[in-house]
Image 1 (cartoon, rainbow, N blue to C red):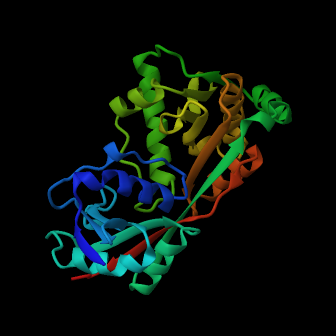
Image 2 (cartoon, rainbow, N blue to C red):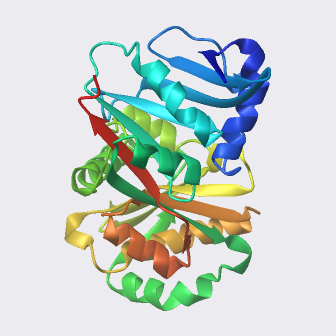
Image 3 (cartoon, rainbow, N blue to C red):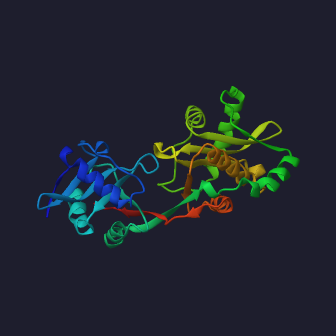
Length: 300
């Protein structure tokens, strides 16, 4: 077995290995892989001239600025040589390694457990088949909330500046209260980022109370695939929680996606985000295997 730096000629083989490593949950193309300078290092392992595994070490991102992320794909027997080769020249300024894989990615799970990483955080994902979704189940809840003064609407195409400010303030509440870990922590949501998100592809729905938005659900088209939508943002103002607002909004958003011809909806979050997990269970989402974030500190 030979371990060497990635070359552009390896892109097709690496794309196939990484796609297989995530069990086809996402399809990677050769153009996703290009030679790049440190600290974004990718190595490959080859046997008999064939690329059999790959490892990538790169900065994890703003949610863990002191960490490097280790990604592995291919034959599990090659992971340790790849890992040791990467550790021989770790960029300065980082104090820990993180690895992320789903619990049914057996080769990666086995490596991280054997290499001294700890199972630090867990996240969940779930899918819902829109062909069988029935909004009629939620009409009694909609009527109950309407009588209490809550009104559902799709976020308008051209809202006022006051509406944008109110929606941004609502999202800040959600960011403050949501359980998070390095994998599920988004960057702080600015007003401009909110405008791009809520006004982009997909649809956002709000519930108003006395004219003010107090709950938000946002669907995006997942990964550019028109058949699938992702519940990317759900938040309810603290004063209006535990009344079913998020459940009703999620149902309204899914009914819209169904009418638009989308066939599947996905979502997910930190395991500790029990309110969102309960909402998704009521809506009919079926959970998938958990995502595990592995951590190893003081790896030098």
